[in-house]
Length: 367
Image (cartoon, rainbow, N blue to C red; front, side):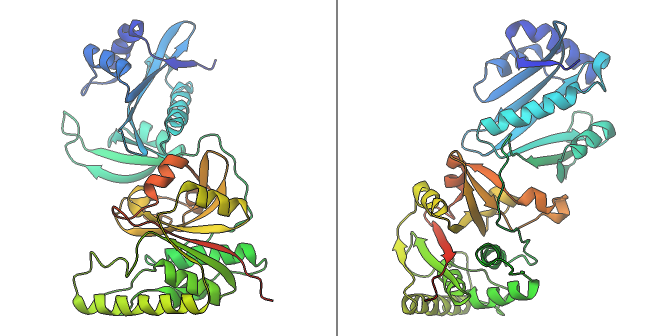
């Protein structure tokens, strides 16, 4: 019999403590903590009920200003272990986190809890780290996470292409757009690197460089697409973290060249911080948008990263993220068709404090 999942009440605390003490030998949640968690506005405590008895619970924490939720604890009474109650609670926790505008659910699990690890991995969670001496008895914890999608099904004809190098996210987005606007076009790693060479700000210095909006727009134009640029900053971009004066000089010269060529091609440029309406209207008109985001939310690194906005369902911007974290067990299915709530999207579509940048792509009229 499926359990009924509902929010916990103060009257459930006795049952919650009983399950907690029976399931866990250490790191137990106290009666007082259960009461605080039930009342807390940044936490949701759910219980699973069968025939009027509480047989399991889960607690999800929501940090303000974050798009990440944390599965703080989940436990099932021994009498109902293996009956699917845990899976029900986990799915409900994921949907609830998504409804709270979170796109990632993270958790910790004891390294010696093989059964729980199998459940998480079977349900699409991927390991992202390990922490020594995490639990009271000294046991290490494994950290897992899953990208959340709610109950949204989104169909698209925009092909997905996984970037094959750390620095080719922008060119990979161009390849996806080209594949959409030019049916029959087949992207390849050779074309990916070629587009990177055409659009990058600097290379063969201390390492490969990334792409900025003018370079991507010029490369798009030269490869048969229309392009429009939205950028909130005048002048050369991404120089703040560059220590080498010589590298700065080369990057500035490369960007001057891109701006000059963009002007020659009559590529429209709008110097302002774009809003959600700009992205939504572009998508509604049949275009795609390469958007600069902070890579922190997507893969935990504070680096500039380009993703492709391919859809808008009225509540979410749908993204293809060309970066697939193979080392964490991701597949292309994890990185394609990601529904990102509007407010989360606008929060991540910025690098540093001020820089917003996007390149709107379409099919170019070659008459």
